[in-house]
Length: 342
Image 1 (cartoon, rainbow, N blue to C red):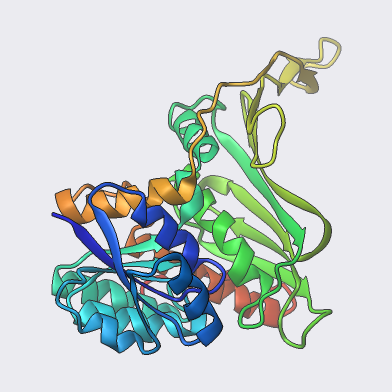
Image 2: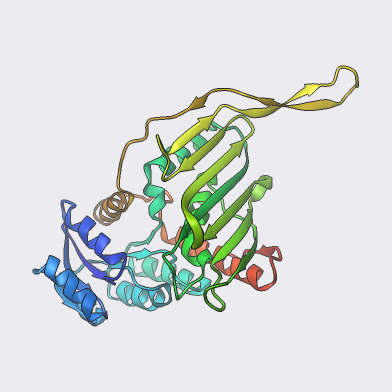
């Protein structure tokens, strides 16, 4: 079955969805919707055969559209996704799924009721380096994980609708959850807003997972350097992912800490650093957004499972975590319980 797609939102990210889906066999972007006239004109010039509407309801009413991509500001996601699911369309929605947890879970239930697919754009789960890291942790290559640390900074792009946590930390939250195959119980977050009132430009967040695993996230769009890095520290090895890394995105450090007995003191140990090789695995090149688009099409045509990579429930859980982080920010970093599914 040909997946006939409408892309709603043609601002910064929507055109990338158009480009990717148009290049996939069995997919066709037949329509789009955008409120900004300049954006409509720019995309129409590149895709003259595509129908572009100002009102997204017009594309949802088309019988030949069976799937929708939502690439609009976060505050608009709930209403547009709700309308698309109600119209019986499969939906790929950019992250975060909604700005409220209860709205996200309502959409999960609606998709199940309508028997249509709802996917959230957790695009970094289709990054080859993150895929390699997930396999390595599944195979216990690092041993039991002690903690994870993520840094995601740059000077811009700036958002005017959500803070840096909702915009940037959302990526690292779903990556951590995917790598650990679990979700955190509590979160603590602090941040600062310098460019706009009530919108944090920089956020430091700590996630507390079961079994004592910690996840620390530093995000900022007010930083001189563009950095996208994750460090995993385990009992046996340490692994890093650097999306901008040269010569490669993943490095495995055969380093750890060992306990050696103190021979002059019964029952006491000394901690010693164990040094080993640094391994640079070969990681294939792949555009994550293209891989995500192919997964969405396969999910529609073959009921191919997402294996946690952007499932609707995973997306709703991320919103629950972000809501709890917002409460922590408002309470000067107080550790906050994450309530799922309400």
